[in-house]
Length: 79
Image 1 (spheres, one colour):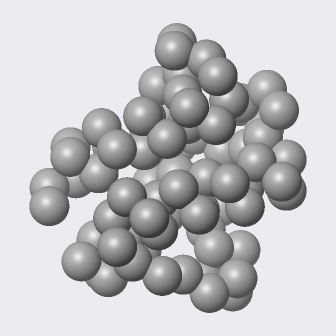
Image 2 (cartoon, helix red, strand yellow):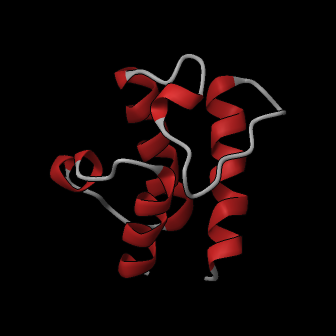
Image 3 (cartoon, helix red, strand yellow):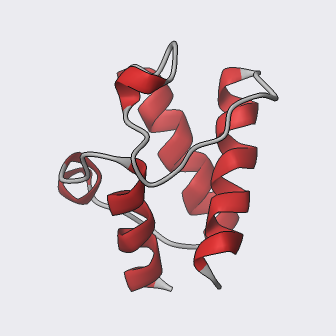
């Protein structure tokens, strides 16, 4: 799966979780950039991505990512 395909999936998940079709995440996107991205939203995002991509993440892996780009790197390492 390419980085672009991962971003397509990420954008779909973010749009679904936040019910906002205008969201478009990129490498530098952080939780402070998306209105409503709190700990509950984080759990929903990770759960949806695990289901969509067939990967599993530990809490430590998720918490070590400071932006979406780092999370994409973590996803790519698992695929």
